[in-house]
Length: 432
Image 1 (cartoon, rainbow, N blue to C red):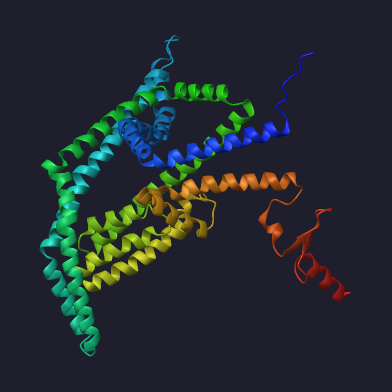
Image 2: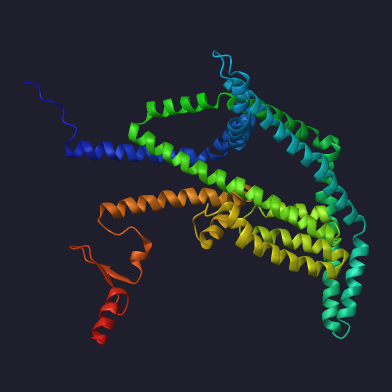
């Protein structure tokens, strides 16, 4: 009788295991040697697909606006137009008009940024460069008057201002102005970058039009593919995670953009009323940097205050006081009203996610570090809760305050002596 080959034999099992470990180690070593080539290949792939990536980003940002326009304006309008025609409901026309208006709004915003804000920023920076010596003299004169009785401090501050002036002029002339000049004037060195950006934007808009026009079909195709690859339970959990990630990102990004626009507008109104120098430049800096949570106010206030300090030290002091008040109002009133509790994490984890994101991905890490961390934090928190629930243990953090130990048999939470239930029992006993 022929014997069946047994895979569960002891030596065969360990032999196959050792072979797999060695093979994986060799593959891992080879991957480490080819990391630069792999990174270069991935970078080339991203550059090739960048128009489609921009299209997906634009689709993600415009989809809520398109749906709102379709539901609130164009769908009721087309239903009235086609109410006598039973063959046509007007849904396709409503979708087409919604997509068209959404794209027009996007192009209008981009045009406003390019043709209004960037030239003003360039003009303001150019004025700062040309009048920097005058500004430094004004600040130096003001410092000399205020510190006339303290010559040592006066000399130190004057030297610091001279060094700051030289460094600022070199940075503005060698770095900022050439970069802005390439964008505004399209000089020879920036033509390729400019044309590449225009190409990515145009193709991205076309891709977003295609996707937005058949958004439901794209979603249905993705769901069909996921149910084909995964089990029904796994696919449902995947879609639940995608919905949570979408709500977290969209709520955070849209809320932050609206909050930053309001703060920038308030800052511009205040600067215009008080006749602050470079009102538009300062307001743009404050509005843009306010997108970054926690550190945004500090990042924006420092360069803005220095720019105003060069012209009028007294107005700089007024501006700093205004920014402190504005950020308090934003942090305690405007921000919470717009964002609500979209993050759901403490200030410590917000600061941690921003620092980690900035260290890994620079500006985009600072901007998107918080919502990414919220998703990861929530995923880990849900896993911890499920594990504790399976072990018949409390899932809420408050239950572990003043915990001494957990009885391994009864699962009873034993508090530290003198705290919690023990303290309450002792108080009742003393009262009796």
